[in-house]
Length: 493
Ligand SMILES: C[S@@+](CC[C@H](N)C(=O)[O-])C[C@H]1O[C@@H](n2cnc3c(N)ncnc32)[C@H](O)[C@@H]1O
Image (cartoon, rainbow, N blue to C red; front, side, top):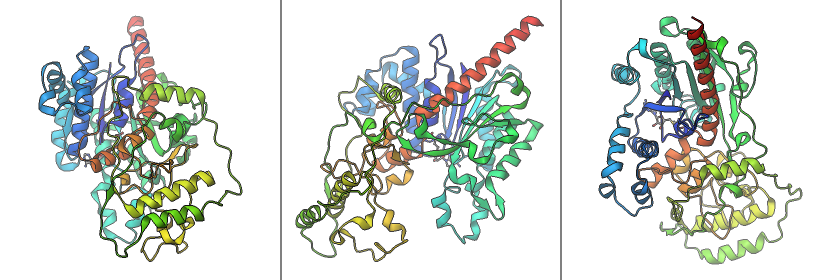
C-alpha cells in the first residue's frame, strides 16, 4: 500500500477516490497516513469515513455504521465493539489543525511520526489543494479594490503545501484548485505563475516535473489551460472545472511514463444521477411578508401565463454515455440502505416555493434554465435591482435541468438553494444534501456530519470522488511502475 497524506482535506472527496483504488490482486492501493483539516465538522466526517474504511479493511461488522448513518442509532449507542476499535484507529489519522506558518512544527512532527524515519520511507503521495476562496472568481469580485487582499494569508496557503513538498519530498503530488487560480493576480503577478515559480525553488533542492492529467505533452509545451479538468468528461454528473497539477519528483521522472485520464463515453446527466431518489416536498418557512399576497392565486396565474412558452430552438437532449452511467451507478449504489440518507429538503418561504415551481415548469418547456427575468413580474421579489439588465441577481435562480450534467455545486449551496432548483416542478424545492452529494459523485453511504448548512458546505467543497478515483488509479499505476523498476534494479545489482 502506498501511503498518502491529504492536506486541506475537507470532507474527504479527494481522499475517498484514492482510498477506493485497488491493485490487480484486489488489495487497496493506498493508505491515508494523515488528513489535515481545520473545520471540526469536516474532521468528524473524515473520522467517520475512515472508520468505515477501517471496518471494510479488517472485515468488521458494518451494521453499526449503517444504523448510525440512517439515524437508527445515536453516536453513544454506535461507539462500541468493532466499530469503536476501528474508530480509535481511524482517529489517529485525522488531524484538526489550522495549517499555517505558526503550526508548521506541530504538523511536521505529525508527518514525521506517520511517515517514519527518512531512510525507511518508500514511495508515497501528497494530495490536496490549498483552499480556494482567495482565488475563486466570485471571491475576487467581492474583493476588488481591497488593499488587504495582497496580504490575506489565505492567498498564500499554498506555501504550506510547498513546505511539505520541500521537507518530506513525496514521490508524487496531486494539487487541486479552482479554475480562477489561472487568472488570479496578486498585484501584477499571476498567482498561478508565482506558484509554478515557487515550485521550482523548493527548500532542500527537491524538484518536480509538473504534468497535466488530461493533455499528454512535454512539460514545456503545457499551457495553463491544459491543467483544467472538466469533471463532466470523466463520468461526473456536473460541469465542475478544476485546475489539477500532477507533480512527479525529478529523480524518478524517467521511470514513470506520462499518462492521462481516459474520457468517459458520454455524459452522466442529472436524470441519471437522481434516478431512484424518492420525491419529497419542502416545508414552508415563515417570514412576515412585506406585502400580503395570495401565493396560491399568484402561482395559478403564473402557470397560466407560461403555458404557451416554447423554446424556439429546443435542443435535443444529450445522449448519456452508457458505460459512464453504468460505472456511476455502480460507484454510488449502496444496497444496505433502505432509503437515501440526508435527503430531507430544507424549508423555503412560500414565495420561493412558487418561484421554484414556475421556474421548473419553464425549464421543462425551454429545455434549459430560464433566466430570472423570464418569470412573470408577479414573482419578482422586492429587490430593486432584479430585472435590470446586467445585475447579478438575474442569475440568482437556476433550475438544474434533467438532460445535461448539473452546473458546479459550490459551497455557497449552504446559504440558499436558489441555484440548485430541482427540475421536477411537482417537487418545487432546491436539492437536498443527498442530491447535491450525488451530483458530486459521493457514494450513497457517505455521511456528512454537522448541521445541514455544514453538510452542504462540505459537499460543495469537495473534489468529486469518482474523478479522484480515476486520478488515484493513474497515480497507483505510476507508483507501481516505479516499484517494479526498483525491484528490477535491486536484482541487477
Ligand atoms: C476546497 S476544500 C478541500 C476539499 C477536499 N480536497 C475534498 O476533496 O473534499 C478546502 C478545505 O480547506 C480547509 N482549510 C482552509 N484553510 C485551512 C487551513 N489554514 N488549515 C487547514 N484547513 C484549512 C477548509 O476548511 C476546507 O475544508
